[in-house]
Image 1 (tube, rainbow, N blue to C red):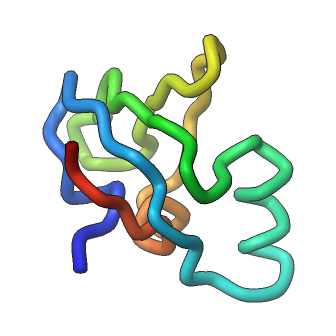
Image 2: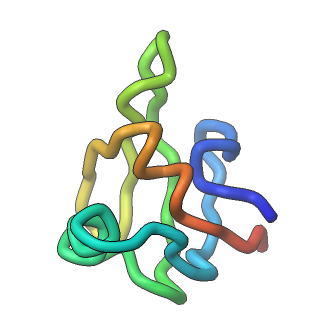
Length: 75
């Protein structure tokens, strides 16, 4: 199982499922990160937090802990 925080910069992957529960899962879903969505990793901060991603034409910053709850499938 691979998660979003393991993906190198510039790579595009598809969300397979969300692993979190409660408010964390709700926050991720509110950002539009849902099953089947393609996500591109744009930048990772030097300390690894936050991770900047692009999906559906929007650029977002997510925490490393949030990215660890997003299981992906590589294309």
